[in-house]
Image (cartoon, one colour):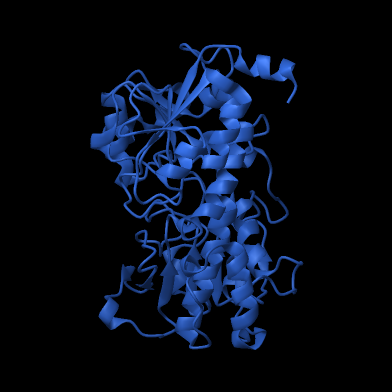
Length: 421
C-alpha cells in the first residue's frame, strides 16, 4: 500500500469495532471477522481503528489467534462504536445505546425474535441488520448464503440416504473443512447410490448456487461435489401471468407474484428451498398442495427456514438443530409426528430446517463472510461522516431502529414490536 493511501485511511475520527460473544445460540461458532480480517483492517487503517474481541471459549477461532492479529481481548466490548455479531444476542446482554450489526431475524416479523426488537427499542439501541445491507441495485453485500446452500444440500442428501436406505452420508462437521469434505465424497459416494433421487432446487442467489455447487457444479446433469445432480427451478415465483418472470421490482414489492413450482413438485421427491421470500408474497407451496395425491415431495431441505405460518412452506413448523436436523411432517394434520412414531410412509414429509447451517463449516463460512465485510462494509463504517452521529447510505438503509424508534423504512414492524400481530 502506498503512503498516500495509508494516510487517507488513517484520516477521520477513531473507530472502535467490537466482536461480541454469541450468547443466544450456544453452538454458534462462526464469527463476523476472522483474525486474518482483523489483522488486515489494522494494517489498512492503522491507529485509527481499535478492535475489541469479547473472550469466548467456543468460537471457531481462539482468543490467542485474535490477540496475535492485533485485537484486544476483553470480557465485554464496552464503548465500541460498532458491535458486530452473527446471530441475535440474548436480550439481557444488550448494551443500552450501543450500535449492533448482526442478523436480527426481525424484518419478517419472526415471532421468536419479538422480544429482541422490543428490547432494542426500550434500550435505545441502534440495530443494523446484515441482511439489509445492499448496494445501489439492491443486491446484498454480505451473507453466509453460499455455505448455507452447501451445508443445507449436504444435510438434505444425508436425510435422503437415511430415509431411502441408499447410503449413510457423513456429517460435514466431521470434516476438517470443505476441501476435506470433497475428498470424502469422492471416496464414499457413488452415483448409483442416488439412482432414485430427483431433486428440485429453488433460488438463484448465493443459497441456490451453493446448493447446486454440491449437486451440479459443472452444469445441469453433471455430477457435483457429492456426485449428484438433479433438476433446478431458478426462481420459485413469477408475476401476474405465466409468461412473466423475475424483475428488480420483486424485492421492493413482491405482491402479485405466484409460485410456479407445482409441475416440479409432482415429479421430484426432494425439494431444496433457497429462495428469497417476503411475507407479502404468495407461499411456494400451500398445505392444500401438500395434501394433493399427486404431490411427490418426500423430503424438504428448507434452507430459507422461515417458520410457519409466515413462511414459504407450511411444513417448516420450527427450526431444527445441528444435532437433530430432521423432523417428520404430516400434511393431513399439519402437525409434526412424534419422533417415536415416524416411518417412511410417502404421505409424510421429512423436513430439514436447521437455521444456522454454516456452523458445520465455521472457518470456511466465516472466512467468506469476513472477506465480504472487510471489502464492502467496514469502509462504510469508517467514512468520515459516519462518526460522530452520521451514517452512510448503506448503513442507514440497514438500520432498523435507533434512539428508541423504528426508522421509516421499518415502521411496518411497529405492530409486531407492540405484540399486536
